[in-house]
Length: 421
Image (cartoon, rainbow, N blue to C red):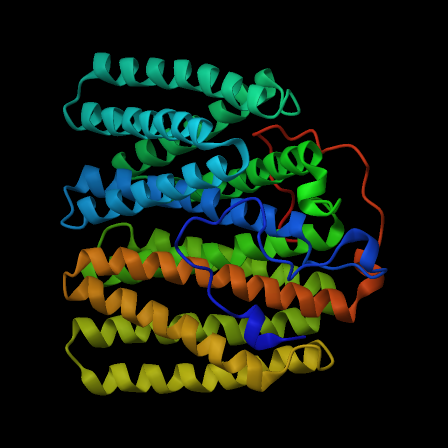
């Protein structure tokens, strides 16, 4: 495996859905399961864009309610995500469709903003109007997507899935405003998870609609599910870690809940590792992974106390984590993943989180969210490399044939149980 190539961070420019590179595997050119087909690349691109939308939408709604200094930068990041989604749609369905998507998608974000403002003004009538607008949006958007995919995605199923998306974001926001932070973070995680069902359903529809453009490969296979589940858990780790670090510095009331959400993500990652390598390996992973999170917390504490020695100690501890975790993965995969190739990417993950936090502490919010998005994207390259190693080591676990029909997920259901990869 070319680890240097696999660990290249995904660019923040729009990820085109129709591949232009042949650095993939044609369905007729391999007999082994793989995570590196054109159809799986499509699904991974949609995983990134849709999940990031949910994550940024929740955080932006919270920032607005707080009147936070970084609200505008957060909203700009959400807008940039919309631009990339629109360009991705245009790459498949043309510029006119891309512009229509952008208009509708931007409008639904605007309705969430209206709901946030109405909540702040305690205006129940305006809140109801925003929800009514969202209801009309989901009907119109469902028809648009069903038409674009030649009814491969069904309008009624799409509408149901979009209602779930609306409910999750509204519930996450309402819980936050009510001070029920544990519920707020639980709903945020549900909203993120839900979008992996969206990318699974849409990528299946696009591949079925344009099979020649994807070399007749499939977006939904056991290996693709593995990569998607790791996409979910690793990127969510980065998103939750970044916000927990901000909350720690700000001494926010929701700090404990954000740390608990991050811990729950760790539990899911542990279960995922255990499902392949057994409970003992899972527990070893948990110990290493939890330790690196504690090192980031120590860095936050050092920053808040202006204690440079504690900051440096935390950074040194993370260097040790990098080497230990890289060796753990090399041993676990029987050498399919090489420690010396893994270490630089693990260091890059640490650097991204440090830089995001330092920029936030320095109140350079535009750079904060630019780096945060780069950090989020980086984890999708990491999950590609890890899933490649896991599949290469355990081909029999990922070789079963998937149903020839598209999954009946519409834009709705979850991508599946991420605890069992």
